[in-house]
Image (cartoon, rainbow, N blue to C red):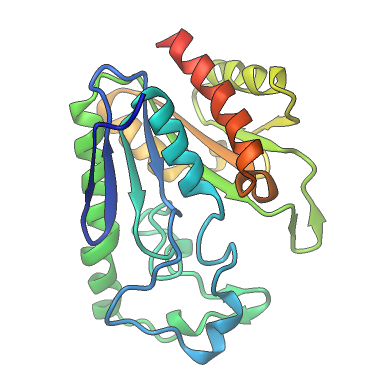
Length: 244
């Protein structure tokens, strides 16, 4: 199947899948784009193109899964360092202050006006698009697509894929078993936990619309490998097609 249409606006891209799809996909960290009029400070050159700016491979995973089942999806078009759409407006991590042990110059000295400028231009429009997409869909699950680094602050992360949940433990277990069956090492609520508020976007929109919320975290060496992505997408497509 193929996605019926694609709509791009400043803060997001929407893939308009079928209304009766089993899942709505979101990808909060799809892009490392720093839009005008912002410019990367010289001190932040070290971060460009890394996991600090976006989730490597997550956009490709999202688009490929959307195409496999004609799923609706919303992908961000701005770097998480400008404002993080997987954090609430009152969360400390909304504007990252430190990365790799050094300050993020882009976010030094933010005042209330600058915070509001970023929220109004990017964070709120992105969530407005997700809200509308979920409202228009019959899908029972909102699935956020992310990726993670194999090594973070000196700690190795051996799992291939993490299935994050808060309330949906049974569904998370079913998805995990489908991925294990495809040959992947899968962990529940690793390397982050949905029970610690770390699946903000999926939880926010699933809660608003009475749907189920999950987040998928794929290790970046797999998320950026086309062959591994095909295996992951195939396993997820078979699972959701059967469950749909």
